[in-house]
Length: 218
Ligand SMILES: [Ca+2]
Ligand SMILES: [Ca+2]
Ligand SMILES: [Zn+2]
Image (tube, rainbow, N blue to C red):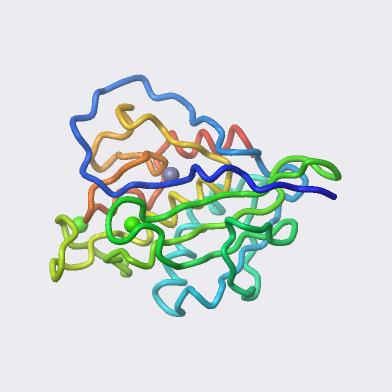
C-alpha cells in the first residue's frame, strides 16, 4: 500500500487572545482525512516523553475524546522508537507522541500531523503529536501560572489543554476561527480554538461545539 505524509497544519499558538467577536458557531472544518479503515488506532509514547505527569496529562487529553463513546476509540499501546514523525509514517493505525524543540519558548507549543492512504485503504493511515520541549509547561491538574512566558515567571503552558487540543487534530478536527464566538477567552472557550492565553486551563475539557463536531464524524 502507498501512503503519504500530510501537510503539517495542526498548530496551537499560545498567545493572548485579542477581543473576540461573537459569531454564530460553526462545526469544525476537517484537518486531514478522518479515520475510516481503523477506528481503534493505538497510541504510543516514544522515549522522548518523560514518565509521570507528562504521560498522565497526554492520557487526560485522549480521554476527553474517548469518553464521548463514539466509534473512534483510541487504544493505548506500548512505547515505540522515537523519530521525527514529519519525515516518515509510523505503521498503519498508530499514533506516536513526541517531545522535542519546535520553535523555542512561545509561538507554537504543540503540533499534529498525519499520513493518509493513497491506495489499499481509506482515510487516515497514522498520526502523531509533537509537544515543544522548549515551553514552560504546566504539568499538573491544578491552576497554571497566569502570565506571559519569561524566565522565572513560572510554568504557564498547560499540557493537559494542549494535549486535548492536539488529540482533536488526530481525530481530523480543524480549528475554529480565532474570532469565532466559541473562542472568546472565557470559561466556555472551545478546545479546538487556535489560540489560548498562557496560564489558561480552558482547553482541557471539551465544549459542546467540539463534541458535536466529533460526533458528526464518528
Ligand atoms: Ca514554541
Ligand atoms: Ca491559570
Ligand atoms: Zn491546533
